[in-house]
Image: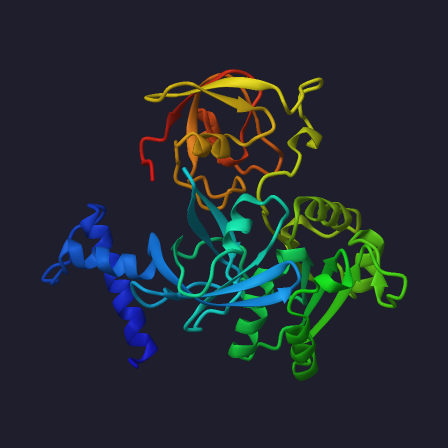
Amino acid sequence: MRELPGVLQDLAAYGDVLLHVLGRTPAPDGARLPARAEVARVVERLHPRRMQMRLLETLDETPTTRTLRFERLDGALPPFRAGQYVSVLVSIGAVSTNRAYSISSAPGEPLLDVTVRRKPGGFVTEHLFTLVPGAHLETSGPTGAFVHEPLTDRGPLVFLAGGSGITPFRSMWRDFERRGMTQRVHLVFGVRTPREVIYHAELKALAARCPWFTYSVIVSEPTAKFRGRKGLLDAERLKAEVEDLQAARFFVCGPNAMRGLVETALSELGVPPHHVRRELYGPPSDVTLEPGWPDGLKGTARFRVTVEGHAPIEALAREPLLSCLERRGIVLPALCRSGECSACRARLLEGRVFLPSSARVREADAAHGYIHACVAYPISDLTLRLHPGSTLL
């Protein structure tokens, strides 16, 4: 393997070349510039738009949770950071859609794991649970910003996980151990029942061999014989679990209800907002319960939605526009489906939508009338224009 400084120099050189190809800088005097196609190949190798994957095996973690282990067919796995996710693309009947799943394997491992929790009536999860080894899937390349930053996250790390929200933390603790990190990590894992503790054997083994790692399981619906910690991840519980609330850096991942409870608790305990990282977890389970939802508007209300170039369709107020459009065969680019990445943005020409507080629409987008279709809910008749930089998949 080439020495790391040489690799970094090559990457820096390609950065200069890429800027030149894009017309941002003049060519260095006497420099031999690779062809545009070669630069594109390097960028695609490091940041692939799509990856062709084959399912090698499935591992049952709990009665409702399964790890899917994939190998990439069209090249080596690209570099990624622990905590990032891939978006899994599926076609089910006449519907083409995608869902984001955190990578639960660590950077540098030859195979890619995603751990999926089965939800009753879940459109995509039910499909994924039918897959058998040998099945082919397409995913996005790794993306996301829910990562540990060594330069700024210097205090003790506290991972607050709810249910399948533990999956990005598995990638992190595996990566930390591989790199020999000694920064203290405490995982506080909230589950409904003792049977739902994902990675239980791995967690016990990690805590036994790594003095820097500890974990606690908090059960919200314990059985009569359960003798462990009980309750919710509220302010009282977090105060009991975390030794130094002001010095710790918190990472939060779990269902929206859990995330809201935890963020409220941390605020009550005086934790500075910049000490908290959160991973969004899809749209709200019931948007009509979100703060700011219009008084008197029922989730079953129906509105007329027109996308330029397409026949009008009917949409429910309680359903994200992205899901509604997909069911009608209008498939926008999408990655996170949580209102963060902006891949699915569309321009709202007429009408009004409701955006939950978790939606992170950039100021420039909001100023020009763009919405994130994955977390935008119709509250009147609408007319939309697809973003000119996007194409239907």
